[in-house]
Length: 362
Image (cartoon, one colour):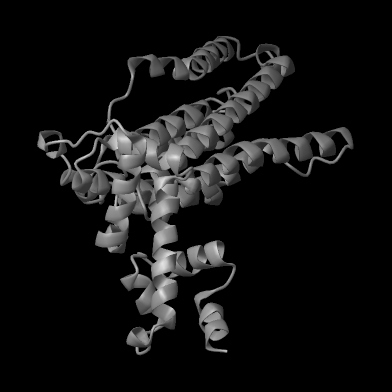
């Protein structure tokens, strides 16, 4: 146990230092560091409880902060404005409640050392504590999944490129380690308890899941960049000062968009954003988004990448580009990575670029 908790505490400290080394620390990164401190606090609490201070209640306390902090991090990293609403303080009520309860139990134990610990730490309280954590974890897991789903939809409405740092799917992985890992291991522990085999300790297995979450955070959290702030959006801050072109005819506006895409081929820009296109067309962003989504029945990501695939198809069979590799053609067609080129090309054509080239050469 000492070895395990020592490794867990050391890994947590390393993860905090790793996040701290990021070139630009935003509010979301600071929340992530606080989350890592919570993991470290839980490891230290459990170590003290196991080896030195048995009068401390064997309850889940610090993990009640994991769900709220992970959700707040998800909210901040996926928001265009780095502002945290004050109402979010309500997310910490379960933690405060069980912390106060733990302090009361500890005080009773210290003042009644001659009485059995179970008298001041009834099994019913443990069940309430465990079930409360399971329900809270389920609630935040679902809340985070929904937030990430809406975020991914928002990204596809505004950006034409994809990357791991945009999807935020790694956050689902972290919440999965904490919630489903705890539930599965707790069920196993109860099963063996009723069968008379004390082989598993649910609290230890919870800590294993938490340590896996720390490893995930140290890897993905360090790589995670701000999504809706940074260079790709800084150049659009002056867009409000540009003269806007208005039209009362929806078909005229749609044709203007399609003509511009066909003639100017802005989709060849790898990091093209919806704001780019709106800027070039002198059109409000919300109006351009409305045209693409309602009149073309597509999101911005799909529209631009379909055009990139068509561009790549033409270049693959053109003698003008026969000296280029398929990867080079993909980059020249506007894709920002080899993997996204192959993935999206197959998605829209049913063939890989190599299969498409071979088919056209027959």
